[in-house]
Each structure stands twice: as structure tokens, then as C-alpha cells.
Image 1 (spheres, one colour):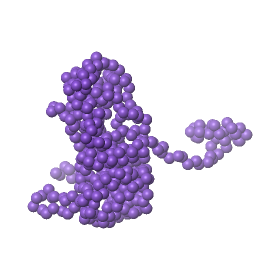
Image 2 (cartoon, one colour; image 1 turned 30 degrees about the vertical axis):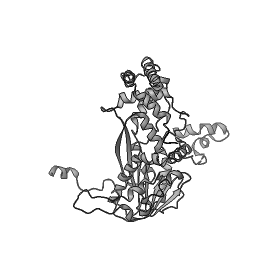
Image 3 (spheres, one colour; image 1 turned 90 degrees about the vertical axis):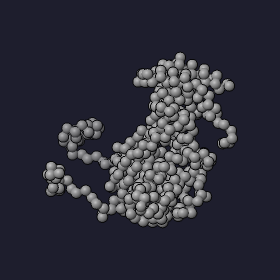
Length: 354
Length: 59
């Protein structure tokens, strides 16, 4: 009663002629649809597109700096070995330079040398659709040999945040190191879930958590000391805990989330920053400081990075934390958890028997 | 981008690499108490580093 009174005080003050009882709790107000969760804009997607186009304009340098994306693509596609299935139609969202396609055509040597090599995963895929907004990056390797080893269709997207595909049209959706630039991650994951057929998986990898924490901290210290303040230089990234929640919110079932740290050693911070630029992974936070970073700051950053994080041998480590996620589109024939309290075996008895 | 031309950042990196002693002094000054860094906390060390860099970049 008390909460009802409180919420209606504004209305009743405007309607003094109504009977006392009615004005309190028996009046109904119109139901208004709330605007939904606010859509946060963090990144400038157009700047990101420009950076990718520029990076791809120099194919040699762009290929040289593909080491991270290629490595993660291999680790990501390895997860497909566990799914004994044929995939008629596969989508690669945010394909970059088709790193996943390149990883799919590689042979898979069995850890046990006595067993024969399993054929490349691409033999289990009828059609791969590689979707990416940057045309130059997507078509960078279109003439290379791996294109002939699988049926690949390249599709230039307007924006990775709006997927123009029919619901339930794909047997597998993959994404390799591009989702960390998406503004509306919950929305995009929901769309991915929608375009998957029932009982089909989404397997993705994105940068998250402590990625580039060395650069983040040393730039913060340098800027604090040189200029007396900080500006956003390294992206805010999703954490492992967030990713589980995001997948669940998007309606995926049977989730698997795991983390992998890849540490790359660089000779100096300038090489690190040049490589990030050539990867098309420079800063695009809205509200970042425009224009080049000042030389004073670069000089200070180099000294602090080396002192705070540098290796014994004089190289500088940079951490890339990769979050792998697997979620399945719901299907009635999937295994489901039993209802709570339905177990009739006491785990304690089993554990005490040994 | 012409690959034959050295980018300004590469010249900058080369000049900076000659000042490792000054850079270490500046770095140590910051890291010694990095929870309480304020503007110009290590201005003296930084100016030494910058002078060294300017000298190195002229050569």
C-alpha cells in the first residue's frame, strides 16, 4: 500500500476532485513500453572501417602483422575437430582478411604420430560465407591459393552490427578477433543466435580483459606525469565474466567460455604501435584525443613501459587475452539440465566410498 | 606508403634507443611510486631524457 501511495501522489495532486480511495490505488495508469536497455556507443565504427581499409592498402605489411589473427584462427578452428558433423553453410562474421578460411584448409596432424592426419576441416564445409565491412581487407588475399581449396563467398557488409541474413540459415557461425570493436555486443550476439539453425553452434574469439594492459598502464602513467591527466588510449574490453552473461542473454544454450593469453615480445613500444596500426587495430574510442600522440608522451611511455614491464633480455612483452566462446542455438532434442532437487543419489555417499 | 622511405616514427625510435640510461632513470623515478604520480613529478629526469633524444636525433 505504501509504495502505491508514493507512486500516485503526483497524479492525485492533479486530480483533487476524485474520491480519496480511488485516487490512491484503484486508478490504473497506461502501460508504457520502456525504451529497452540503452545502446552504448563506445567506438567510432567509421574510423575502424577507415583503419582497416588503410591497413589493407599495404598488403605486405598487413600480411606480416597477421600473426595474431592467424594464430587465433588456428586455435579457434581446432575446436571444430570436436564436433563430428558436416556443416553445409558456415558464416564468418568480421572475417578480416579471411584468417579463418586460411586456418580451415590446413592439415590437422594428430598428436599421436601413429594415427593418420585427419583431413583439413574445410572438407566438412560445403560453403563458407566470409562477411566483413572492409572491402579492401576482405579481398586482400582473394587471389591466393587457399581460395581454391574451399568454397568461399566474400560478402561486404554495411556494418557488422546489422547482419542481413535470413533467420535459421546457417549451420555454424564463427568470428575471429573482430567482436571487440562492436558497440552493441548483446544485440549482435542475439542476431547471430537468430541466423543459426536449431542445435547449431556459434564459435567466436575476441580480445578481452587484460589485453594490452602493459601499454594501457604505461601510457596512463606517462600521460599523468607529462600532462597531468589521462585520455582513453586502449579500448575498454569485455571480461570473461561478462561474456558468459552476454551469451546467456542472447539466448545461447550449453555455453563454454575459456581464456588464453598470448604474450608477444616486441623490441620497443614503437614496433608494438606500428604493428597494431598495420593490423588495423588502432584506437577508435569515441572521445579519444584526435591527431597524433605527442613525441613527449611517446618518449615517456617508452621509458616507463621498459621499466615497469620490460623483460630481462630487453624486449617488451604485450599480452593479448583471447576469450573463446561457444554457444548453441536452442533445440528441443538438446541435453538439458534436470530440474533442481530431482537428483536421488547423494554425492556425499559416492565421494566417501572412494 | 612507400616502403623504401623510413617513416618518422622509425627515426624517432632509433634516436630514442640511444638514450637508454636517461630513459631508465626516468622510468625508475616514475615506477618508484606509481600510485602517486602527478604532473611534472619527474620533470628533471624527463628533460634529461629529452635533451639526450634531441641530441641523438640531430646526429
